Structures are given as C-alpha cells and as structure tokens.
Length: 312
Image 1 (tube, rainbow, N blue to C red):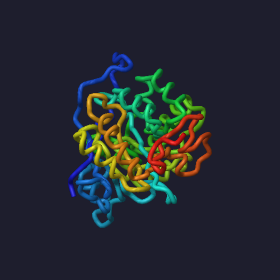
Image 2 (spheres, rainbow, N blue to C red; image 1 turned 135 degrees about the vertical axis):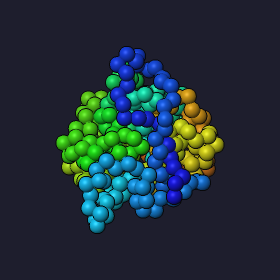
Image 3 (cartoon, rainbow, N blue to C red; image 1 turned 90 degrees about the vertical axis):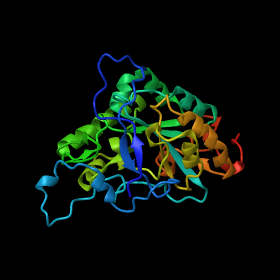
Image 4 (spheres, helix red, strand yellow; image 1 turned 90 degrees about the horizontal axis):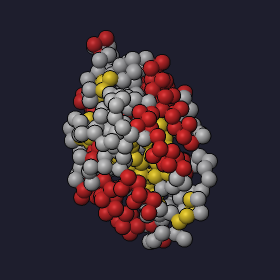
C-alpha cells in the first residue's frame, strides 16, 4: 500500500526576489496515496497512509489510544461529486506556490479555454502573490472558478503534524489562519468567499476538518490523482483523466509548465467526449448559486460529451 501520488509543491515561501511568472527549478516531490479510481495505482482503502507520515505530535499520544485518522481519505472529506443522471466529472487544478511550485502552465490554461472546458482552480495565497495579473485574469474567465488552496500550502492539522516534511499548524488558531489567509486572497479576486478548501499535500485530520466546516467551506479531496504533481508520463496522465469514473473529482496541477500535463489533457478530451462525459465546475455539481452552467457559460459553448461534440 505504498504506491503514491506526488504533489510538486513545498511549504516554504517563495524567495522575495523572484519575479512573477518565473519558473523555479524542480524541488523534491511530496507524495500522497492515490485513490481507488486511479488506473495502475495501489489502493489506500483506510488510513494506512498515516504510516507514511511523520507526526510530531504522536509522542504525546497514549499508547493505548489509536491515533486519529490522518491523510487524504478520512471521513468528512469530500472526494466525489453528488450523483447525477448524466456522467459528470470535475477537473480541478492546483497552483501551490513556493520553490518548485510557483510556475504557471499557460499552455494548459489556453487549451482549457480553447476547448471550452470548465474547471475549478485551487490557488494558494502565495501563488497569487507571485502571479497577481494572471490570477486576476483567471478570476475573470467565466469557464473557471477559483477555490482555496490555503495561504502557505500547509496540511490541515491542529497538532503540528507533518506530511512529507511539511509541518502543519500547531493549533486551531493556526489552522484557521491558513484557511482564512487563502480564502481572503480568493475573495479579493472574485468578490465571493470560496466554497471549497483543499489543503497543501491534501492531508487532513478530523479536528481540522471541523475547522474547515466552521469556516463555511467544504473540505475537498479527490477521487483520481491525475498527474502526481507532473511526475507521471503523458500517457499515464491521459489515461487517468480519460478513464476517470463518473462522479470523479480529478486532481491535476496548473503550476508545472515544464511537464506534459497540457498535452495529456489534450489527449484525454476525445476519450471523455466518446464516453459522453459532461465536465463541470464544483459549484455546479454541488448546486451552489452561480451564473451559467456546464452547458452554457457566459454565452459561450462549453464541453459536453453527451452530444458527442461541443454544445452550441
């Protein structure tokens, strides 16, 4: 149970001297277990992923009491779309910021716009600071919606737990600050509070899930780890996206321009059309109010595989 998905972002702030839009060199990858729906991946059916993580608070826990669940697949974390009569899938793209995670894949974003693919983009505050103009353009694009990836890309904990070397907040106050810092950055761009929160590394513990709910957001995970932070080869990413099951929330990255994510998504779109899949943003799938829908956004045609083509 150790085959894993990699998130190519770390918890350090990007250097102050870095100019917006500058891609940094690759940094060590952070690894997250994949879901049951990822092709060729090992399944993590419970919380055995916890064994992969260094928990700084574990020394104080009683040896007779089981440790609270810790990982991306714990109870209370949204991992699938609600049931629908049509086969729906949500493509979500993370932008983490920091060394190794502050890039911008403009080829990928241009592809999504050209193919009229609605998508949900999870941005950290630090990535927004690195790319203020780009973030503003993304917020103005009707095909996309922006959601909260935190202020500094930290795991969701209130006990200072570590996921892949990244130490999370040590108490509820710190967790609230991480969530609220990202939420305020998104709200400044969009004028509305984000509905979903996906933490850095994708890791949660139950007490932090409650903090997310108290903030007014839903804690979001994923069904399919699509690109492993960009480390998967093009064919494997295309297969993961193109074969994602109905109801899947697909996790991809938009901050790795030197990888093959854009090409892989381009390869996957004909497969999704052939399967008559409708691609939706998260707020549509969960019936949150928003102008437009999956078929007609801002007066433009959007991706709808039910017709075997783009709807007009």
